[in-house]
Length: 271
Image (cartoon, rainbow, N blue to C red; front, side, top):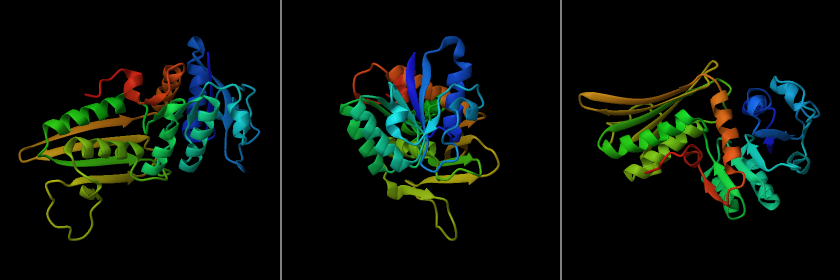
């Protein structure tokens, strides 16, 4: 069993990950919750992590002290907020604890700060840990290399409560396109309004929809005269993301320090 600490335990993803670790994976227990962290002032402090996740009580109280939450953990899964994720990565490096960041809304500088710890521990930053989405990343890389002259647009949809836009997954799709096509951030168009003029050849559109209880939809359009290719992933449950996070914790524990991705976890070749 691999003990892990859940950072952001009372959030949507935190609850889902705890529930999967405590219930669905019970028959083949490879991971086990060892600590649960929430922010100071949270109404969930002191409550049982199993109960608030919808599984049975497990005797692990939600705390606001990182030292307590990380005690005995071999891995930490962080779905909190960017500033806290940076701090927790540094603390995990000091304690030699594997660090997996699923927090969205991280700036490039914050990602750099987190990855500074890769010389001490295994570190993974992933905006989306589902198998299907990571295969989408791979397919978009292949498609953009083959369809360099096509017009490309990214459209994502999420529930009304999501706080950041575009989503972390959409940002990763954008980064893949920029890298493969040798574009830059100045070529990105976040929505359009008014008299925008004709679309340029290098332009990449990124659009965010928010409403209802949509878990997460992402489509990349490749369009040219006479045809359109759409690569789409639709998530109907957060369980797929949570299962990926737990699989990452299992995979990275015992690995040498370094930067890892879900491609490593899922054995998908990046080239």
